[in-house]
Structures are given as structure tokens and as C-alpha cells.
Image (cartoon, rainbow, N blue to C red; front, side):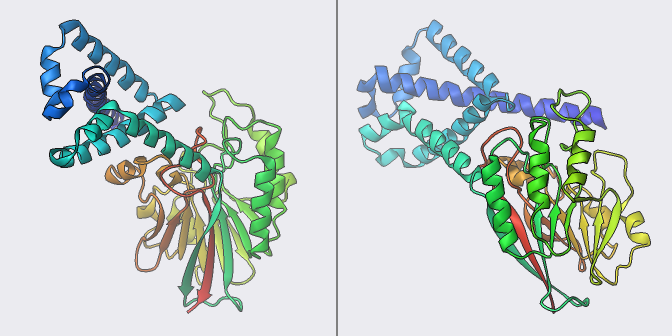
Length: 383
């Protein structure tokens, strides 16, 4: 199974590398024409005319430069790779538009396109907007209805996921968002995992949980682990599990690991261990639970909808995907079914709804171009 996945991943990377090589080679060639052979633009088929006259060493140099840029693009763990991928995506889209319109474009517009200035400027703009988006956390509201008995006025849940503290928000920014959440008068605050990761400084972990634990919520603050909260043994980390557990405990936050919690008399929480660890099945967790109450299951990774289907859970809340974080990753996640759902609301079955949050931030990079930076405000009302 794993060998098949590895083989498919290698083939996908090889195909992407080849596509990127052709894109960057074409871009370099067109830029050469724009800056050094402008006399060809009145003729229309400039690239064909010039490439035939280019010496072999120049063609080889273009391909070599294209290969280097393509290799750098595949390094998605570095900001330069992210920028080059955005540049390629924007450039490919603009070139497609050019091919559709070139028959009636004047020479100066063709030269501007060939220069590569437009995709470069647009890629920079997209990165700037992604940075601004990540630093502007906003609420996303959902209203759900149920036939189950609820307290007067219904129940308001606020769900926070994927803060990855240290990627974007400062302590002051985080406190401001916590104050905004408190002003919404939530009944409960649900922390859906990946609040910290391996790059979070040890000294900032207690600060984060102290702020979250101080949010005024009638029924308290609850937390489940994500796949990044506990440091991986093979990755150098600035904190350990004991530091995290102490911060959770001292902040008055309740940790749920394959556990349940009753909120008043009308809402049941089921918090799952993360899918990266050994855990109980959804059916096992629901087997002895009182599902006559409105039941909310918390599961960081939206990868077990099949296991939740038919259990009688009313609402499943997840994070993990970051909504794709960087466009067009969300589209690829949907295409290849990497998760059961990437972002927003969906129905698992006739009884169970599911919502996936894109979260506060994203992993590693202070950029988010694929989805909003958000927390969820969910009002559950009697029908």
C-alpha cells in the first residue's frame, strides 16, 4: 500500500517537474525576445522566428535555468518554492489568456506579456494578500437546527483550530481575537487541535493556553490533540509533551482524548484522539454515550467520515486541512480525496452534519491564499 502511494507521489512530482520546466523555459524564451529582439513583435509569431535562430548554447542555457527554477519550485518547505509555484500558476493562467486573445492584441501588449512582468507583479500581489489574509482572523457563522431538546435560546459553540502559534499572530493579536470571541457570549469554546507545533517556542505555549482558557464561556473550554501539538520524535522541537499538558492543565482547559463531556443537560461532547495515534473507533465512543442529547464530535483530521456515518452523532467538527492554505492545493486535495472534506459544511448522512474549519493560520508559512483565516461561530437552535 505504502509503496503504491510512494510510487504515485514520485510520478506526480516527476510530471509536475516536467510541466514546470516547459513553463519556465517558455517564460525565459519569451522574456529574451521581449528585451533583446523587440523587432519581431509586429510579426506575430515572434517566439517561433527567434527560437529557430538562437544558438544551441543559448537553448541549452535556457533549459538549464528552467530546470533549476523547477527544482526550486518543488521545495514546498521553503518560501522561495511557494513563490515560484504561485508565479508558475499565475503565469500559466495569463499565458492561456494571451493565447486566446493574441490575434487582436497590439504589439506593445504582446511585448508586455512576453516580458514576464505581469505574472511577477501578480504573484507578488497574491503573496502580499495571502500574508494580510493570514493576519486578519474573522468569524465564520453557521446556524444549525435540531429536533432534540435544547436550552432556551439554543447553544452557541465557538471552534478554534490550527493556530500553529508562532506562524502569524503575536501575543497581542491573539489576545485581541480571544476578547472578540468572549464578546460573542459562547456557551463553549472548542479547540480542534494543532494550536502549537514544532516551531512554537516553549515559553509561548503557557501564554497561548492562558489566553484561550480565560475566554468567558459558560460551559468551559475543551481541547483535542491535532497531529502537530505533540512533537514528533524525529523532528527537533522546542517543547515536549509535559510542557503542553502542564499549560493545558494550568489554563483550566479540559483535554478530551477519546473522552466525553456533558454540557448542561442538553449537549454531549465526544473528543477523539488524533488519527495519527492509536484510538477508539467512532462507534466504540458512541456505544455507551447518551445520544438523545445533541452530540458534537471533535476530530482534528476529517478522514473518518465513513466511521462516523450511522453513529447518531449530530455534528462533527474538524480542522487540519487549512482549507488548502495555498491555492490551488485545496483543489488537489479535493481531486485526490486526501481528506473526506476540505473546507466548510457538508452532510455525512441524513442525521450527521460536518464542518471543517480552515483555522487561524497554516503550517510553517505566514501565507494563506486558499481560504480565510477564521474561527467558527455555530448557533444550534431548536427547530
